[in-house]
Image (cartoon, rainbow, N blue to C red; front, side):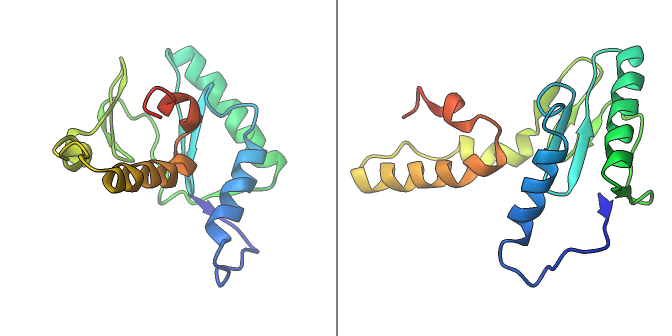
Length: 140
């Protein structure tokens, strides 16, 4: 979470604008050691030594672009916990089954119209999933 000085939230596309800014700021880290979800950032590493270097890189980037963290909302040293809809442990990041139970219980689309609705929903989710086109290519 960030504290920022200038962001006009009266605009309809303020969230998209903010996401574009975060994408530009962390373009070298996204997917490698950092995931950014609209107003949340997750720094991920495989070892403690790497994690310290990744945190230093992230904090240096924040300092470079004069972005400030809200310390009340920061969580450090998460070993195993539910975080942003994911189950995070020392070994892996898994999707929270409670969050996807509706999707798993959906019946297969039987008509052309239902397939079109499903494709539209997947396209809507594409803005929140990195490389969604590549991941959904077999589906399409």
